[in-house]
Length: 316
Image (cartoon, rainbow, N blue to C red):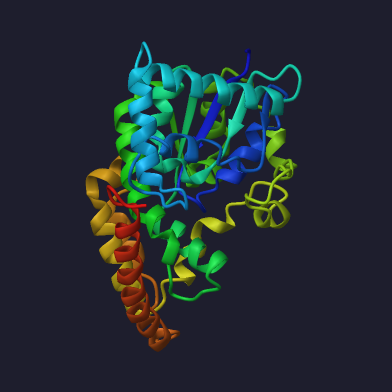
């Protein structure tokens, strides 16, 4: 096999489709919309975090027991998973490609595993102002309704997992912020391409390749709205945090991430808080936000209780 895996590791709504469009313009890089290929494969060894009709917890424990019977134990199992995955990447790649770019935002849940399975892989960590990420989720997927629902795993567990993985593997990875890529494009994109051993052509940014097809997952919206590199989305997040309730949530979220983790991501807590406080405050959507948050808290508690019962040890 000659193909080499290239992973973009980010939260959703961080600009990963833009990065995919630019990098895959190089003939050496093949890609697909969003494979999600490795999530079920790697979760097969985890007895928590997934629910299935067949009983995911018992299956994960059985697979783990089987892996330990192999001559090399779990290392042999992961080696076969690597070979299986690279074989699929190679079949999906264009002839002559050096890389297959797998852009699956929820790989933030298995980032550490990816480094174990693909020690010779390439890993681009893409950060974005976390308030911009939250705002884009609300605007794009929730129609400006104050509900994070199934995306809380991204905003919290995703941040923690990505920061931890980057701390552990920074010497062999490349990190860049979305803001750098659109505000300081030449040096930022040049650094990414240098990391991959490819030559950066600035003209790529004036006529972006469309987002890859071939799947139902992935972001088609940005591809149509932004045919060339545009810095306009950088400041759009302020439109989402215009009432007191949303601003209070945003302060709490930034403080939860904390100064240290934000520093790893390339941001300063004090600066982000000042930018948030500068946003004009109104009562727009305030009653609706409070009501939705109360409902979401009750419903979320119920779902978490059910999920724990279904995914805990010994549960089918």
